[in-house]
Length: 499
Ligand SMILES: Nc1ncnc2c1ncn2[C@@H]1O[C@H](COP(=O)(O)OP(=O)(O)OP(=O)(O)O)[C@@H](O)[C@H]1O
Ligand SMILES: [Mg+2]
Image (cartoon, rainbow, N blue to C red; front, side, top):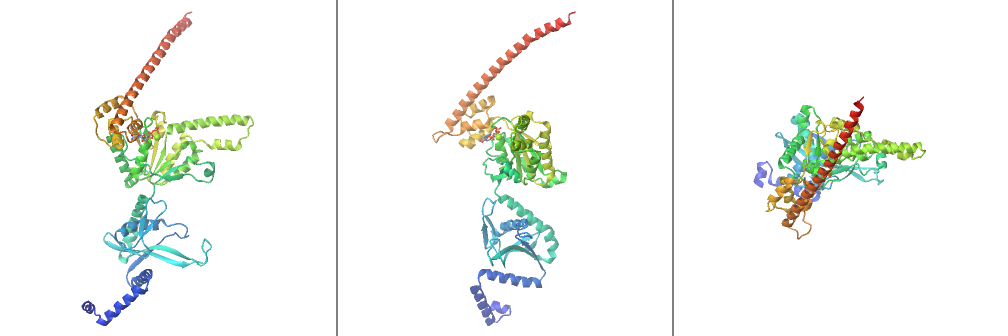
């Protein structure tokens, strides 16, 4: 030790004194004070050097709103500091699905970007407040901020590229950590509408994934590829001058997995879901407001779009009834006002979607589902609005194999051959197949469930055969009636032609 000290030009007694002061300093000053002293020493050294410091406050200028930049930096530094910082802070943040670890107060972490080293420090300063919001006089308030320090020669690169990188990455981490939400407008009453509230939300925890979704594997892969391309498409959409949006139309008979597919897409892309219940939307302008009040990285869903638009027709009928009541002199002022505003038209829907498309650049997917694709107005589902049309069909063998794996944890069975044949002959929805495959008690094994499915398929086939027979009979009767009518008509025509 003496030798090392001598090499630096210290005498033995100087070294001993320094060590003594260091020991006293460590013993008598609490850790936070040591850090503060360290920061001031660094500041003093910084004045003498070429360091640049940028401060990022936790709250924006008016002190009321949390700074987005601060949150993004905190997220970014959490990814750096969990690996190297000694002191971390665990935050139970609102809207976050798990604990968020971040740099503790007075900690410093280094980062490197394009070969340039920078330092981040997490600071807190205390100010004595005369009186705060709760009326507590003289209570101190803490103000947190991050300081970024770097050499002056990198000023341009840091301010132009590095900071953008930090904010972008931090935002991404924040999105990944957030608790995903299912928003709905359906439970809203007149009062919440008056108050200007649009969406209510609950956490979104649907377990569906593409792995558990039963459908043709090729089709599934195509959809996944399409979604991946969309999710990574920010630059592409900018380049071609299109808003970063995509429309999907899911159509098919009941129970074929349209709603399940929406949850699988949301889980795959880690998006929020906005379930838009058109029947509770009062008018076109409210619809527009709802759509514009959606955040990025989300799916806007309108289920059973054909029924929603039919219901608008029903409402019109209600209005007409109300008019008659008015004529009779019945006073229902409030109800009438309510009813008058309950109109969403097809053109209103089209305008709102187009408005959404052109309003902002956030990534959004809009999905319509329907059981009757032929009923929909072509304008609603044309490419550009609904870019990808996906048919969800009855359960065939490939889809069955996925369900058998999900529900019974088997990949083959002696009955598979028979089931494959029967599924080709009979139209059964994946929901019905799944119901047959689900064990109803602990005693039921794969064998029992598969036999139940075979029986159910046979019954379904018999039902379909009888239905076809009845249809055939009805058709024969109709044809017979037509034949009988035709000669009568002919006779009449002949009579009129005769002079
Ligand atoms: N393709 C599928 N893969 C996996 N499970 C499915 C599939 N289709 C249906 N199911 C099962 O059946 C249930 C009903 O399916 P889902 O609600 O997705 O059907 P849908 O097509 O939306 O029906 P509807 O047209 O009546 O709204 C789901 O909860 C799921 O368990
Ligand atoms: Mg559905």
